[in-house]
Amino acid sequence: MGALSHIRVLDLSRILAGPWASQMLGDLGADVIKVENPAGGDDTRRWGPPYMADEHGEATAEAAYYLCANRNKRSVCIDMKAPEGQAQLRELAAQSDVLIENFKVGGAAKYGLDYASLSAINPRLVYCSITGFGQTGPLANRPGYDFLVQAMGGLMSVTGERDGKPGAGPQKVGVALTDIMTGLYAVIGIQAALAEREHSGLGQHVDLALLDVTAATLANQATNYLVGGMNPTRLGNAHPNIVPYQSFVASDGHLIVAVGNDGQFRRYVEVLGVPELADDARFSTNSQRVANRDALVPLLQARMLERGKDEWIALLEQAGVPAGPINTVAEVFAEPQIQARDMQVNLSHPLNPDLQLAGNPIKLSRTPVEYRRPPPQLGEHTDEVI
Image (tube, rainbow, N blue to C red; front, side, top):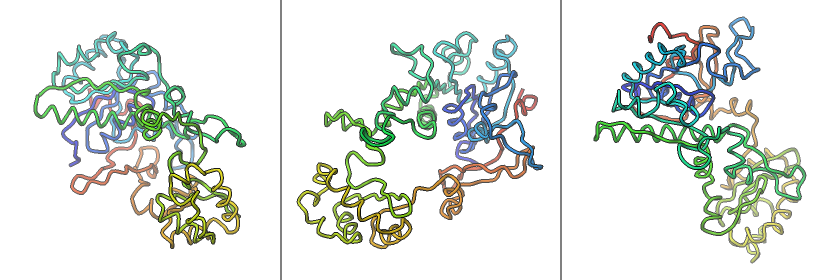
């Protein structure tokens, strides 16, 4: 029995943020009913290549992008523009604990599927809306996309190589991080509302905005500005508040060194063969190293070129200095630690009995995550559910 096996989720969302949230709830045991448009379903079903291969190695119509966010769900095709479809959805909402949607603001009301309408039918319903800019404010009616909001939310302003360096310029993160973080915040909000419902007996509206989440997850960069008055800039792979905490070039490639305190810095420069740097007044404390970053880093980089990355990593690990390789995705899933933690899982799909997906990182001791269903084919469970 999963931790949320007593919960039914009606998922009217598509693309990534909403499906990521409902997949997490499904992994934790919830019964997730994914409602899709009969004319093609979730947009990400067509976001390929690559597409999943069948057992004979032939490409299917199941895009890898869709597969990443839709396991542990049942797919139901319902035309919500039709009165019959709207009636079916209201009946399902009446029997659900959670509803997730990502319509434009006011879009669900056209079909009688807004929070006010459905909470009148089911007062216990926890209704989660995910939009680009939220239900209120001057931008509420604008559509929101991860890439756009990474830019508007400041994330791209602190991501990318610093000015004056080759390749300088703002960069988006390599995955749709704003969508994923919004999905995770949605799960937190939903679970908080479910916990509160145990006392009040009532559901509530959870309002999530990609822009809000992006601003919140600027974390120390936000407080560097709000508390310290420092408007952060791009630093490439360096850290604004810790030095040295960045990538270095070894004789045969790149590696990461993450010095978190003065003791680690002393051990680091001892391994490099320049122990005198730890007693240099310019570098003896982290604050001084941040202030004198431009003087220190070239000295360290010159020494790092003298050995290969694997040799440095071994020496630094032995000295208790955090260091590691910059892995490709293929190297990540070949990593023994990832394998030991069950972060690559097999789900038997009707078209491919050996479908490989990334696992869920949550490890619960009594009610562990379960992989009960592969990502469903379009409308696979319509008859079963309706």
